[in-house]
Image (cartoon, rainbow, N blue to C red; front, side, top):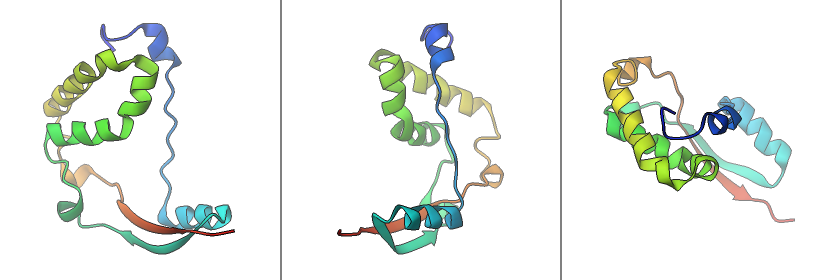
Amino acid sequence: MNGLGSEAKVDAFNLPAYVTTPKELNALIERNQHFSFERMEILNNKSKYLTLCNPSMRSLFLRSAFEGVLEKHFGNDIMDELFNRYTEKVAESSFFLNAEADKSIVLFVLLKRNNY
């Protein structure tokens, strides 16, 4: 992390992620049995639901999702600098700001807790 954290902490950090399809998500929640689906929609109009068209917005989006886990592992002292550097890196790359390159699916899922 270029002076922000020790190499050992970076090497020990693991953020496993698996992005599920809507069909897989449905099967997982049904198998869990603690919730039932009320509604699920694919929000495919990116310009209406999710705008990450500038470096600051993309950085804030990721910070809101990952700051807690990063802070727990690396400490609070580096968070501002880490995300400032990320914003600068995104600004240097046209790929991240190209809406056509983004192949993600945004889901809205409304669940109801099942009573046992």
